[in-house]
Amino acid sequence: MNSGQTVFSQLIDFLPRHEFSKCVQRYNGNHRTRTFSCMDQFLCMVFAQLTFRESLRDIEACLRTVESKLYHMGIRGRVSRSTLAEANENRDWRIYADFSQTLIPIARKLYAHEELSVDLDQAVYALDSTTISLCLSLFPWARFRRTKSAVKLHTLLNLRGSIPEFIHVSDGKLHDANVLDMLIPEPGSFYVMDRAYLDFARLHDIHEAKAFFITRAKRGFQFQRRYSHTVDKSNGVLCDQTISLKGFETKLRYPDALRRIRYTDLDTLKRFTFLTNNFALPSFDITQLYKLRWRVELFFKWIKQHLRIKAFYGTSENAVKTQIWIAVATYLLVAILKKRLRLEQSLYTILQILSVSVFVKTPVPQLFTNVSYRDAQDDLHNQLSLFDF
Image (cartoon, rainbow, N blue to C red):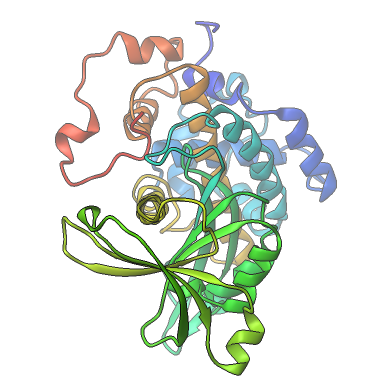
């Protein structure tokens, strides 16, 4: 890697620029644009994500102090607060959503061979959502409750590498189960979900697509036991049953057999009841696959803490979605950097070092080989590490 390049320009070398150009052309993003292109906007926003800028004025002040370096960072236009605000307001957010979708298969391929705690060859996904609270007076288009606005980030996370495979940004009113209609189930894959997604008609669609789901049962749901399987109670599994649903409407929605597993977590002594359409895996493996669902919650916690998706630079729907999707693209870009350069540090540590080194002309691998530091886990005993490989 060229030691004459700044760290920021080395990072953006990993971007597939031809794919970005396709996304811009698809939505005519540079129409009537002379000095500040979509790429300029994207790079300014990536800079803001990497360096934790608080506002558009903050971005402008920081970049104008290094104007002589902007051209080599890929930023060709003059950076100003008003120009960036106008770009976030008017340029179609789908440009950056589509570009993020082009980064996902690149990252997925790099992390395809990461091991899970369960010996399994198939892909495993965790589906969940997180709510980002907003001020009703500033974001009236995202009304959630009478005195509150919010947007929801629905995410399907590939548990091999914690790569988001699918993201949908909605207002706070969209029920989680409705997102199942947007997914195209991958045959043979496992989809791990909590009770919010317990919709038997939609789960049957996953079953018909030859995919598997694992979810938790709600209290009081009606079923009829067909058969009880032998279990080893020493690992916490209490029962493993083949069941059918009771009730006229419920049987119409899911007419096939289900597997019901009751389990006690030996560490917390909490009891869980799982439902799945997979009858091949051992019952204990089913419980451990569901336990991996915490990674999607950790993903949400991580991006909220370390990227700018809770405080927004603009108040329109387009500006908010633009910022969220560029944050996702930044996350994927750093994940790709980590794997391609074979960096051993956690993603948290990588971001912290990049945030203070974006203008340094040092090869990126050298930043992580010639620096003595303590890993983030030394200081954050209660903070789980998302990329802890």
